[in-house]
Image 1: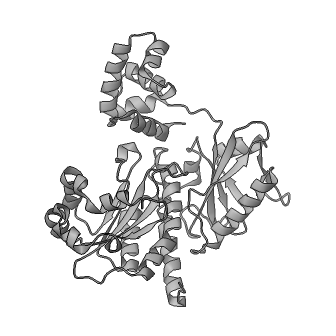
Image 2: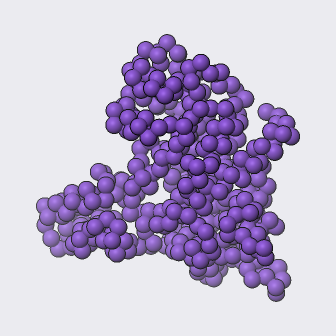
Length: 394
């Protein structure tokens, strides 16, 4: 699709706004979704994780939908969602896919459904276009994430041109959300200073200027790079504090450079999805580093006159042993010391039997503790328990 100069300028401003959601999650509701809705000429929209609640690393951002409508969906109509059933049955929950449901769900079938007659008509939510921001098995580690846009029954139908417009936004939404989730799972709602980045102990973070030069590295990144075990910084002059990010593996280094160039270009047509990370082999071990990129708006709150940050780089070390801070479990979730020991042992074990063996107690006692701590943590399955603890792991 060829975009006019006016359209390109409008899209550029919208992309800058989307990237503000990376460091300030509240802006998804207050600014970003309203702007996207206006861009696509829709009355309401929702960006959410259908199968994960906030305490399970999920989220729910809305625009133009009342809190009562949201609660009704959760309490009574989730299982009646004829749109979700159509997408599931047709295998359409594919990362990056944009679905115009009028193409796959006849209007007669929709209007005859309980979901439409009792729920959607309450706020004239009839026509739906949805984007799969993260798929069910995303390489990014993000949960299934959907961005849905609603129009009324008498509004103009969605067009192929609008589907393409949304598809061009999805990689940028994925990058901003992916970076935002890393910040969020580190027990912070926003990043407003460089010192805050040092409180991301499990994520190496680099800030890059418009030329691709690293001009800030948090403590976790410096620990990784100081080992020079597959990744390092190369200074171009003695005046450089950090320099250029280099991978020792030639193929990985080429991929890093290409990914950084693409990130800095802000080109909506070539920007890859956040899950398309770069794998960098370590020199001393079989495990790897994973490197992910996200653009920043140049007037972001982290930049100063002498240092203007254009992109942020996340480095994850697959060899790093995760640590659960007992104090977080006690202060944030009210777990007793015994429940904390059970939680950490369960996180590191495969079964309640192994936990019982590790703690030297009975299987029956451990199962009782697990039931109580699941209630306090707000989870109901081991998978959700693991996901929650991964979010607070150091």
